[in-house]
Image 1: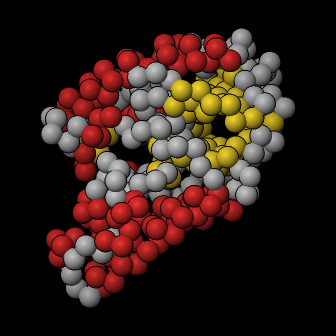
Image 2: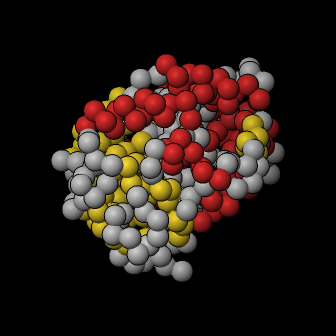
Length: 316
């Protein structure tokens, strides 16, 4: 496994550090005490199976209780994108072993949130070296409160922290492919990145895309509706008509589906912004149901229309 950037074993780093399928189970437990949501998520992950879908010769989608994961296999070592919940780690290792005998090498976090990083320590113990944006390490190093959900997570243990970080972008070559790791400006959080497997033409965009439903935007971590829209534009510029796009939550998607999500966000922003500019308070804006024309398609997820409208209003 990687012990330093001079080691050939992981992603011969080419250069440019410039400068669930379902929604998380704990988000559904709105009636639970905040301290219980993490415990519930971990308990649910104990019994939730990992679904594996082959996307390319050596790239797979892994879906379980937490955020969507990806796996690249090969003789240079396996690369895992995100780590779900700590209690899912045995099932994740089993899913990897079912398609690969290659050793563990790198774990890349798309952002800091618990349902994508709680398994970091367990996967690090399994041999993975953790890569992420520099702000992911900063946030994992300290207690974080997701205000909307009323959840506070303690500082992550040392073994869960990314050991290699970057600011804007990192280009790496591994297992016959080129991986581009690129930071989004603050969008879902201020830690979001995408990972593009160029040869396989698989793009993991993390939680800047919730495929099929209104997204959660973590304003406590710098997320904004405008940032989400810009992140979508950045991802769309990378994706082609045949690109397989992995969202943070929801089913595997296409460029056309990501475009539809982006367009929905823009419509929601404009409708709420018009109300806010006219002097409506947040409560008044929510009461006017500005997303009514969108709700039949997008309002069936864990983030209801009224809650989503409030987030848009506050982050304009």
